[in-house]
Image 1: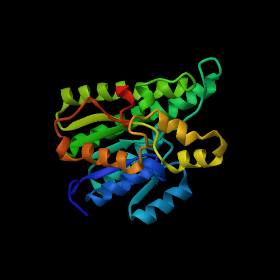
Image 2: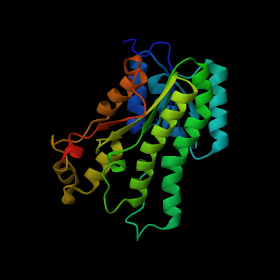
Image 3: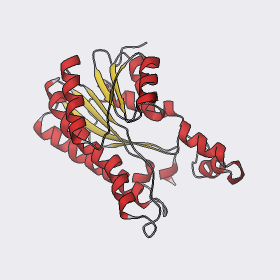
Length: 251
């Protein structure tokens, strides 16, 4: 264990598995007290035991639940220094084949949750004396595709919302920063399951062909970036995006 995040309290949404879990693990290893949240109670409890950290059940689209979680964190820990808005879903198709219900659902989980997380965490983060908000977007928020219109839109909006939040924080206090992370295709359990379930379609090969360094990102690649943004090492970085794409956006 190192102490890059010593004495910092962090909240990570969508952390029962995948990227959220990896970020929680990495931040705990650097000395942070991390609270994980998710809508999947079974997986959340299992991860909490594995990482020896506190957890709260949270539907990130519900305003009242965000209020309750922040209130509990204030009561239990007295401060909040790190917020990682990680919860998200895929869904929808191209613009003609995406129904309005799917459009709203994707934006509710991917975008509204980031708004709610920032809105209700900021007062406690400001009172805590310093803070870093890290919003997990996607390369799809920068480089669009023809068949994921809702996902592209929601992740692009997260990027711009992060900049707005950063400017608000800079104007109202210089104690809280806000940035977004934009990962390329990452070998999470969900992505690996998709690859393994359709071996005849050579999904991994097709994904890798799009990435100049010719491999998928690993969850630890994104977790390491999150640790950096959460730490005081990035104290002068706000309102920007950290692209983790193996060179895709450079092509």
